[in-house]
Length: 522
Image (tube, one colour):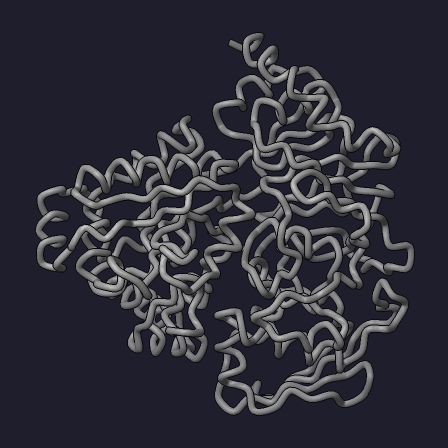
């Protein structure tokens, strides 16, 4: 089998990799990312590929360490009033954008305000905010109008949307439009003129970046660029990507499919690791704006069509890398719960709900991300299951980058919109119900735009709770209402994604997010 796979992939290698031939192998880290970079703005989109891109070029005020505790990053120091209603922060020295301008409080404030209009956690923080204002160029102050127990956790939010700090002139961009250019203050510069969409993204070391002194820990600590250049080489075929790694044409394979891991583990000069201790949680996302899933009975019908094992066997394969997970919060953390979950398929119940909901044969448009195996499999399994239940299915194949653009379209499916797409979330993003994909804030909600006042009320109460028991109760209320009434989305299970890299690399940072600083190539 190994030799067959190698032969099949070998013919594809020259076409896939010719674009990288001019780079220096000694100081260039060549990475196969999990998807193609199509959108550059990490506030406009929650796509993880854009988040990973953003971590290279932008910096954050705080970041989470390996214990998921917030640590200062761009901030040098801070103080808070005894009642924690007023917070004052000072930026550290040496912060500079890639265009040579210094990072100021005005940049920070404008960036946070833009983030707060898109991100669920940011929306909650700003709902509790009275003022956010500059004291001077290096100092800014946050005054709360109501208690908010997650100020530092918000600034340190690990994953999409991350509150990256942009130049004021870019942060003034309408948050529902992408920024026109990428100017960061992080350890690497985005080389726009060398970007080949669908093929290659290039980053160059930012010589003026001043890293923190602490060792790297998750997304916190010193972000030291130890290579001069990073190239992301988009190779959608897993076998081709695997063979490029084995042959040494690339150095790092970000999201190796589980069924290829046995081959990679036997390959000379290749290491395989699972860097994320909490894993990923997948979801089927409904569009609440258009038929048929504007009716709750029809969303609930879908919840009775599947057993999660169908998704996980098809998309991940090896049971060593997946587990059933019915929690809307992180399954492998204390906040995880099975409250209200539908665990067993019941086709008769699904058909009964379709009848109750008055299903009239309206096609279900499913966005099928063909270049991400687990999502591709989920779309195919869903299409088959919905057809068996009696739904009319319109399965539309495209790459993930196109999915991330089309999911933002609010028009009906027949005019470029959609009914269902699949994605996944880092479990580390689900440690609180403030996660974007749990929001049900109508027009302010994440793609799919669910609308439910009770869920939003409970989400808003979460950061104001002062004890774990109250927080746990709120998490379970949100989940029960989701399974029985709202279904912002449907959990489809959890999995752990291994990474594979050449053994001449060192310093790979363990994190739920793919981070590329501190990696040294010998």
